[in-house]
Length: 289
Image 1 (cartoon, rainbow, N blue to C red):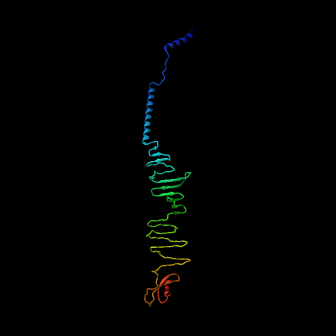
Image 2 (cartoon, one colour):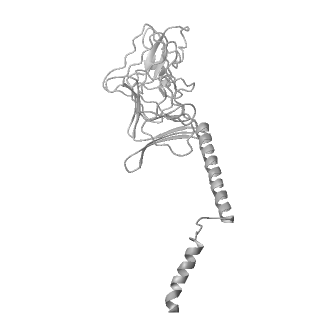
């Protein structure tokens, strides 16, 4: 009986006291820490937003690009001076219409042309002391496409109508040269010289030396030889002078005359002999020795 009345008594007491209320949330120091972290997060968000706006303003970010860099339909456009600290890879580099394109470097500027395997095919190096180009062939052409200069392993071709050498010492050719015409500028002298070796001019159809408005001089230290194997040597002029030919001794009895005859020795040497009523060459054969 008492056990049956106990639950009824407990429920009656609970109903008499009223319903119990349980508080749910963060209170005390936990609540203050939460508010502090929320406030700190808001401050960081504001600082981050301010820094982002400042960077956008300083770097001049726009819809078209950043600063001097503009994004166009054809690619990128840089306005003003640009500095590249790392290698630049581009399909085409050109300046604005009407403006020049400058490449500046404290040491050198190197341009490499690569193949599919990234192997260097052509290279151009411009340094403080020299300009070097590496490739299989080097060509210089006019705007119309005419070849002016070409160089490869086999030959060097000059396609201009005239090659002018303005150096005071002229041009030095360590080996042979082949050309249809060698001519000096108007009113200038043409000089062909070999200081320590021989000078040979050869042509299968003849060599012509012509001085239309001046003298032609051939000077040598030892011998000057004119040789024709199958033809003849022709001296065609109004006057032919041989001023330094050796002379034979004068005839003892006759007076000194100003008329001489040209004598030829058996070895081809020429000398002068005083003319007489007959030939006097046989008298001075001692000159031929």
